[in-house]
Amino acid sequence: MTNGLGIIGNCSYNALLREGSVEWLCWPRPDSSFVFGPLLDRERGGVFAVEAVDADDVRQQYIENTNVLRTVFSGSEGSFELIDFAPRFALYDRFFKPSMLIRILRPLSGEPKALVRCKPVHDYGIAESASWRGSNHIEYTDFSTPVRLTTTVPLTYIEDERAFLLERDRHLVLTWGQPLEAGIQETAERFLERTIDYWRRWVKATRVPRDYQAEVIRSALVLKLHQYEDTGALLAATTTSLPEHPGSGRTWDYRYCWLRDSYFTLNALERLGHSEEMLLFLEYLRNRADEREGALQPAYRIDGGSDAPERELEHLSGFRGDGPVRVGNQAFEHLQNDVYGEMVLAVSRLFLDTRFVGEVPPHTAVEIVQGLLEQIEARLEEPDAGPWEFRGRTRLHSFTVLMHWAGARRAVEVAETLGAEELADRALELEARAAQILETRCWNDQIGALTQVAGEPELDAALLLAVHLGFFAPDDPRATTHVDAIRDGLSLDGGLLRRYSVQDDFGVMEAAFTVCTFWLVEALAILGRTDEARELFERLIGFHNGLGLFSEDLLPDTHEQSGNFPQTYTHVGLINAAFRLSRRWD
Image 1 (cartoon, rainbow, N blue to C red):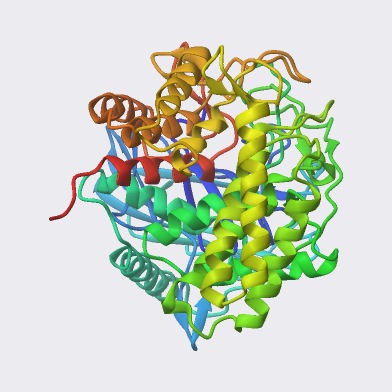
Image 2: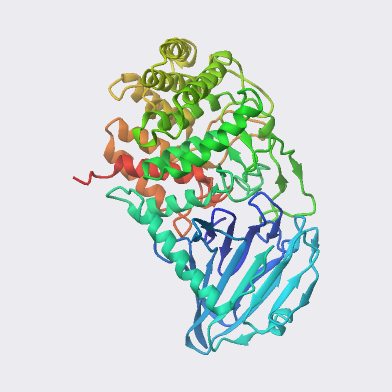
């Protein structure tokens, strides 16, 4: 379903493209209305497409170690390439990351003909914009700010959607807000060179494993694009409403910051050697915690807003006609108590890693951890919606208790490092209480595993993290039975795992949730079953979409990707599993 989709971006916005068509672009922010959204409706989604008149072969690839996408169109009359990118580079001691999409067409052979169509829309496709022509640009009206296409392509050909001979390089620069007032060709080429240089320098600063380097680098670049740099928020995905599996009704808006996802993303970025994202996110988190006296929602807007009412856009048909299309997310209203343990884990490295000395004063560090620990203590046995956000019920979810345990255990380390003895004692007590709940109420002897809900028999793939986090030591017999029970109980096809088997608000889960299988790979590796883990991992990474990218789910029958895209959770799972499986450099 997402095969062939490539992502470009600059940490201010992202766009998805397939074979010259801009399938998804939201401006001015990733959670704004789309300007181009044919991904969700071919009729109402607008269009910005570069097409070849006679192409019988279209190939896409990234310029190596960048987020710059190259598409080559080949046909009987000739061939040309299309370079798409969002400018990003250092300028005046900060990063230049405008709401600007640059597209460069270059003839490669013969006499190719190209066609350019551009019709942006607003308010999620409720209306097309009108336009008027300037000397070298087309201005699109009815937006809240100027939207302009500045180009060296003859404007008549764009307005009339008429093919033209591509006898030399042509440049297209689409802007939101401040238009391009400089030379088109010189500016586009200079921005391309500097953007390629930025991404390659970022990759050079990335720690990679000895094996699976290409997969890890592409995943790292995806994670970087999903930090909205202005506030530090981390997006779960670029899209909304791509169905988890056809006809499921499971179409959610993921263009927000889930604290749980953010912890896992930060953990992966730190493993890759990038810490600046952690500092940005800590600022974002502290602002959220200060607003409600330490209580946290599971998700927030990227500007920190705490409200995103879920509504259906009935005028849009949905991906391949499969709706509904939703904006906003009911998860904002949920109680998901695992976030407190995850936030202890997320921020603790700033207090335990001597490289960050001076970033956060010790008394502030103690206050942050103490506030999170107080929430864990108050909510230790409180039923919640769980990590998979069940809508119609609350339970005491084992995953939530596991994260209480992990957060309390890490809080002990932080408190001892900071010399806060009273806080350390309190954290030790909470760690023991959470462990007791897991062992006496969440462990099922008959099944040989921690179950999804205390006292109930259903399994949950998220509980594979009990092995990752060290609740079960690798030589603990329970670790083996736990992993095998989850694999056997939730496997759909050769080890591809769904999240759970229990019927939820929308029926029975049919798709495999891709990160769960990566979690299984890592758990098997921790248990020393490396050959088994590697075989599963290499099978799984073979299901990428053609550009090394992954969405949320895999359809078990066809192994086609489905769900929102690209999914940060999935790419985090890939990175962690690759590091776990890779040979050591020495």
